[in-house]
Length: 199
Length: 199
Image (cartoon, rainbow over all chains, first blue to last red; front, side):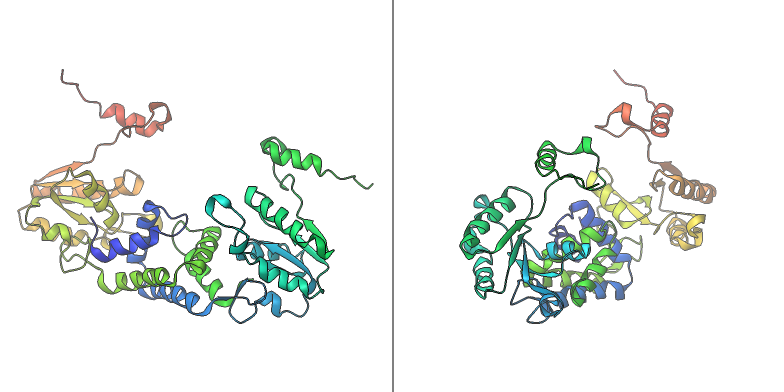
């Protein structure tokens, strides 16, 4: 139905996450009419990102050098490690400007259904970092879902003999949300984790 | 917050229609972890599409040669021209397999607010095709919105002296839709255009 190269582009665009056949077609026709320079910039950005981006030797985060921006920063507190599943979780936490420690990116979560076991994650590298004895707190910030919880529990048990402080991010009602729209599990967690108000 | 090339890619992806900042980030991280060959194929498809795709000399549709696939096809009926706004409208109509005539792609619709007048559309080229005298019917298939209707009315008046049959696609209830969810304009059009049932 399309000329060859347009069909190719629609097919490639349709492989991207969240881009269905309709969006792929819409994007392709947009690009057909766009400035050739703009399209070339996108093509170059794609090539560059694969050529230049690597993963941090220390924490597994996205990096352009041996170590990522956080691990290179001498102002970050190396005694606290926040364990996350993916590089985009690092971005989300950095955006809060609340955390001044370092990260460890696992590259996923334990999920027997998807065939992901502990050996498929960067857990060995995490244990290596903990072995130095410098780390005093490990914050488990894996996703608040089945796989994330399983991974957090696994890690908590694994590092228990090392005697460091192991914490998990709080679950509860999203700020700005409506109590009546919260699912029952979240609401249950919010009750469990209720705190005394200091007045 | 991101390393340079990742930020560049997110920015370029975010310019695509229907891709917001969140989707751009999601796609970028997907590509970071994707196979380098897959990403290169997408980059190549982008470069190729700008290098090889042009617009049909006759109808303005997307083409890889001087004339598009439809205009090259000798089985298509050149006496009927269906006027559409964009190449993607051609694809939508081709998908119905109902139409065996040819197309004329205007490249938009008359829209004073956006500064698009008749001279910005491929209307002169359309008049050139009609001048040959071979065309017997002009189907105005511009969008059923304000700009599309204005464009259809403009064209209908313009070609009236040529004495050919000028038609407009029917408006009415979408097939498979729910009557109660139809907006009042569509429902009004469906009443206006009601047809006798042959039994």
